[in-house]
Length: 187
Image (cartoon, rainbow, N blue to C red; front, side, top):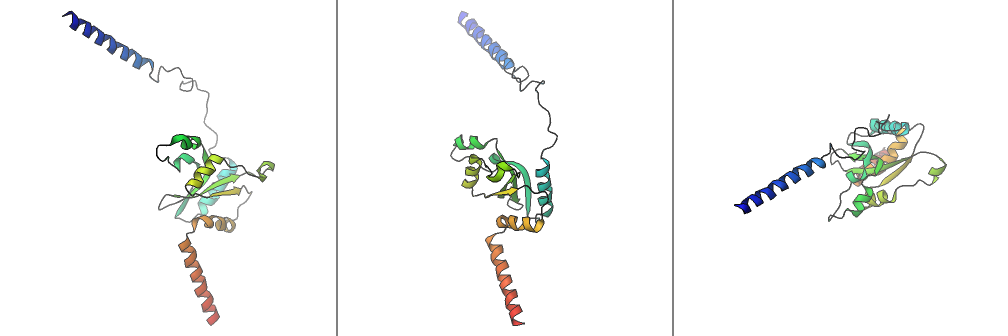
């Protein structure tokens, strides 16, 4: 009988300890200042700066319907670790690219865009080596585009089509052009 009482007492003490420990590490009582209500943060006035917003709106309004552009895309949303190797993945976890153009049908990224302000320091624009290496591993090209006061769609279209046109589309257009040239020669 005394052994049963000892076992029940130990069990009761363990249950009480677990309950106390569980309560002491709950988020409400956690003493981390980041989780407290008095955390010193505020909402940004704008998600994109003026240059980024203008570029985004301009390209969005002109892109063909089978493509779309998203701003500030996390690199960790474009790649995933293989073989549970998180070292490289953790190096890019909090990093992003300014813009990414995606294929609407496949939802695959077509090109990452690094929008660079024109300044003295941007003569040799710096692009994060971890981001660059990650995007290279998945064969995603990076287009460095300097901020302009005004964009001209035909010029931007030519640049964007370098990435959005497939080889099949190029060969179809070339064969159509050759057919038109032959028709002109006959006439």
